[in-house]
Length: 599
Image (tube, rainbow, N blue to C red; front, side, top):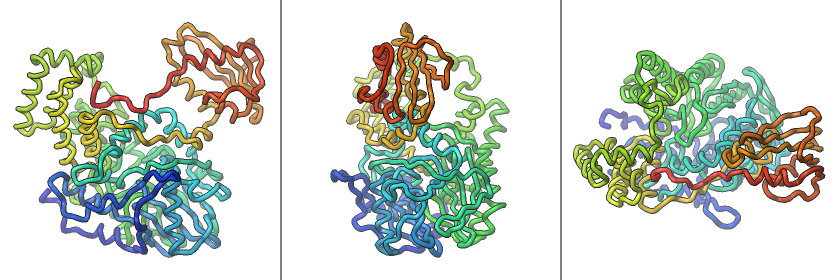
């Protein structure tokens, strides 16, 4: 830590620049009085870094915890510190355009009210979603009812909906670890996540875009404000875009360049991102937009002012992703596995000395493994790893080979004394998975998780380790976040609705079931046929005329209601209604609170 540039306070100056006012108190509640955001709970960060935190992460959290309304450029403002992301407000001819309205409607409404308190009661005249992650659209109904232009990158709806619905339950459970949602906000607990402080837990919403941005160079005018867009698909999100305000010298970088190393594969789970494409789009940003900007801001963190600083920032961010990509490929082509590459990877010294390249949210270690995964998948080529036992069965055998649970704990204590916490965790994890009732192993594993977490520079690693320790001691914490809101479900296409059903079919339970249902969507003028056989639900649009078990005539809204268990009232039907009941009977329900650190 001694070689880190703690003398460089430029980020603190930039984070404070343009400050207008704070929200006091910085607490947001839902309609029923439940606290969904509490930035005041991080007041302890005003103190010196304690022994329970990595000094570099403590510094990053001090910056991220700054909250209030800030002026970025003439007519451009940001509300920061009132959710995981920033909400940007751009004043137009008659009102204000909102960019990325946070995670929750409650937080977005409070953020807009803070802006209006100091800039006047301007109506919202447009919405821009920079990309398809929920922290950039979820609060939209807190600022508008939808009677305004809403701009988003092409493919936004497909990715926004599919990511949050198809694998949503598993992602939300894992997000609880990543953001430390069950941890107390204390110097020895949750101190942020590197990208921001945490995610709010209020109401998520979605209003579909009215205008797709489909090409780089596309220009649009909203409420008199001119935008020049750069599409960046496959970078931080599958659908994402940067844009320039050419008349104001301001550049929005979405989440493609923020003050940290971002994730190539987020710990909550997602599709692996393309570090090669990410770097190339940043090069394109440098070529097309950077020299036209006096300030660059993003949907997280604080802005960068001055053309030279903007160019340097973008070059360093680009070189960071390009270096990790190219060196991972170089080493995997020499036969190294993802874990081996991650162990020896170090970024160039010039980049290590820059704060915004540090792994507060992503990390060199797990990003390298993600790049390996993108190209070669989970299998490292060693046949010994081709058909291993699953974790619990492997653990039972490992512990037996080592002489039982007590012997494993004894070995682990020795490695702890030698400060080899990483191997101590491996051993103790085997002991717990072999016998989750082994209290000595659980307690010692929780202790080592705590030490690893409090020593981590990466906020999401810290939260994951500390949450694992908490659940070993207290049991599974309830998953408080859900992204499958009514708006997201309502935004599903009919194809996505049937896809979401197909992934819920309990295959073995449905092995011997066979049925076909025709769904006439009267409001859309479409006919879908779903066929269940061999444990697989298959859909087909406009099928040929063939006998089916059941025919239903209904609207898309009635379809959603029917599948949610609201009955068939008002739905015209012909044939055997038990076919629908047989289909519902083989559907499984996802688990929200499944075990992670125990079998």
